[in-house]
Image (cartoon, rainbow, N blue to C red; front, top):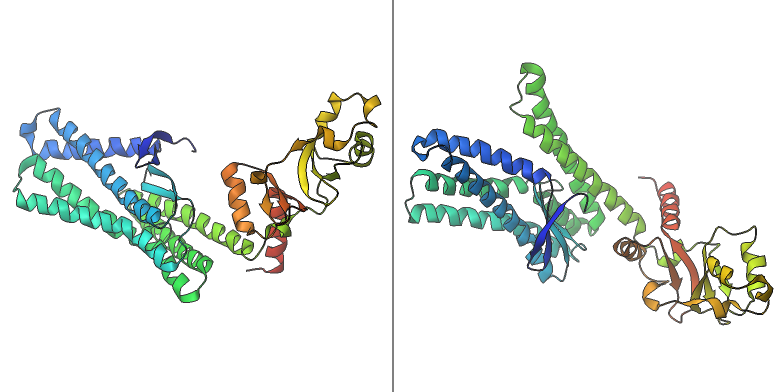
Length: 374
């Protein structure tokens, strides 16, 4: 997963750590450990750094709990969670699909901040119930304040933050169009990203101060991810209303099972084809298998007139096909999940419509985008 390190599973969800996480872990450990050492000189030389490390790990545990909040609500809605990843700016729960309604999308989005607010209340209550002083009290106070900040920061209304997903759900509810919700919330995220970058650059240029350098990094993060969300929404909107049969190649590699290998070679291969594999149909047009061109090498050319395509073909499983009336968005998702470049498209009665490829989908999207410019 892009250089991420798999740590294990949490409640059946694959758990990853991005290498950037170690940078923040070290930074928090050093900065907070140094602060504890200065505040409590009696701790000695090593104890402050150990407490700083513990505080850093507990902070990331809080971020993890935040993402688990999103994940549990999504799972309750029947949505699978592909992974949870901790990285430089927090965490990310990767869901297999979107919620089916704006109300459900809202509950998934609000669950993370709700967990952070709950943790803020819990750490604050513990600190009051057990009047802890010294380093332990300071660590509990830090955890409480960071969880509150985590909740409030994530409620900022712009993707990819939770507040952006709440905004997306609101626009979806008002317009009835989930893609408009994503695009609107993405634009808000890009605006906030530029605002954060500018707020970091002004002190840098005017006073040479790096005090707001984190604003620049956060702004860049918002810009990048909000831009991807908008692009993804535009593609999904272009795909909406289209079916698998709309993206079938007009010159799909299809041959009849009854022709001989000589006819197959003469009519479809020699000097004509770019295809390494052909789909095979019976006399009723139903898909019954596929024949790789390389298989012809296993039969002497002198026997090509005597051997039919059917004798050399490989059966095709229905699990490797898609129905002609299936949503093209679902088909693209299937291609990505199974890491495939093409899929045969059949009708309900098994009759082959043709072959769908990633390239044919992209060509269809380009045509649709040109016909309906934004």
